[in-house]
Image (cartoon, rainbow, N blue to C red):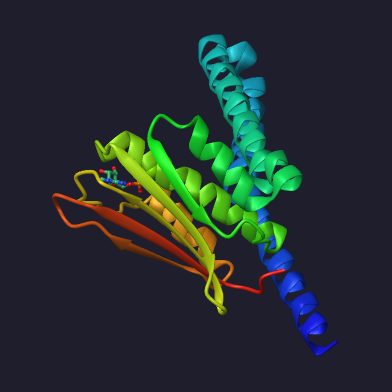
Length: 209
Ligand SMILES: Nc1ncnc2c1ncn2[C@@H]1O[C@H](COP(=O)(O)OP(=O)(O)OP(=O)(O)O)[C@@H](O)[C@H]1O
Ligand SMILES: [Mg+2]
């Protein structure tokens, strides 16, 4: 009973954290862009008679801004729950993802592993980012994905045999992943000496359901 209560509390905390992340993504992204769009349109309206060229330019910018907002919203919605996670769970979703990739990837995982959905989503997207990095930057031939629960939390690792030398940068995928994991009190550990190999480990304290 006590365990169940603790698990329920963990789920509630994870869900609240996920809601805060979505709020922040909306606030910093689409919301900010829509405010700018409203201002640009208001200015364009005023300039319509006196400076039609400038008005037209502003409207063109506004249209581009609207397209970007739409793309951001699509991405945000996609980031909330990828359907494959609901249907198949984290481990199978990662296996399917690994099969589709350009890089040959081995998945070592406890098949019964289930976590809170928001944590599963964060880890799934994290693995996708790390595999994309390995494909894009590492010149790797192979990758290995390991998923385990060590009693304290989830440990997910992506290793590649590429050239190493990761340098995190502001606005990059790794920085974003670090922020996303921090929402769950999780952490990212990067081991990537120049010359390789690279190992990136995500750790998220959580119950195994
Ligand atoms: N597995 C890897 N092997 C070697 N270098 C890597 C690897 N992953 C990342 N890097 C290096 O670290 C940098 C930072 O990665 P990060 O994911 O933060 O940004 P990015 O992949 O360049 O951009 P984005 O993720 O926004 O598409 C990369 O530009 C690349 O130089
Ligand atoms: Mg990246």
